[in-house]
Length: 327
Image (tube, rainbow, N blue to C red):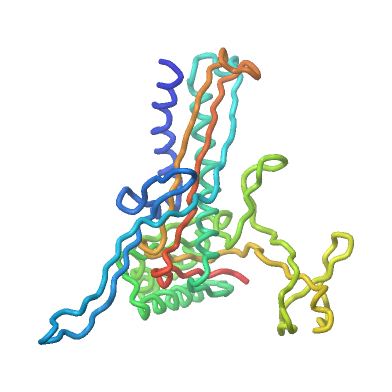
């Protein structure tokens, strides 16, 4: 079997590993909602229509419009890695060690990062419903989920396609109650998916691979404030030699020297997404080179690359996204 054939065989297998491990693959579009573009672009199906108007006995039906267009958007990020296993550690091509390496890479590196990036992008989308709250027990979680479902009910978000992403700890706190009330609240969601807290942040940083790999919860960045007056209870900072210090008593006259800390990742309690409100996409590519073809050593080489649209949230469906996070 040649190297092209090996890659062809392994890509579907790795796609299967990805699908089984991913918590957010439920949001990925199909050929009806997503199609590939060119030059780093992807096309997203967008449907909109006018509401009702009066019927006229003279003029008949009102002349509204329905639009179905393919909106072109840019992919968010391309990510890659070059994995190697020495010939002597895998003396029969693509036997267990190499197969395990590639599968574990998808399961433990690609999937967590992709889930975290998707959740962070959805949570940071302007116009969605957000609520800062600390949930300490099952009763508080139930109340928070009730507020979420009530908000979506009032905004007429379809109940049959509401997907709830929630941390295992909070889901367990609900299960421990095992009450009629808790079951009634959970019935408001069509799918409930437990996502580890390590993937549930409002913002993350994708490491570029020069010194660190993977991702981490965003520590934020300092930027010059644009405020023209001091905002009550807002934190301001001054900078000296690259060190930022919080201002204890902000003054309007000094605002031009102040900084703000923005983009800090917060822990997400839960995220509810109505299926048609957001769409995600990922293209994955692999290459395999045998030890005889390895120009840098004597290893089996697995080159992995993906191209991601972490999330596209439809501006006319933002009512279908609700994020609860810890301030």
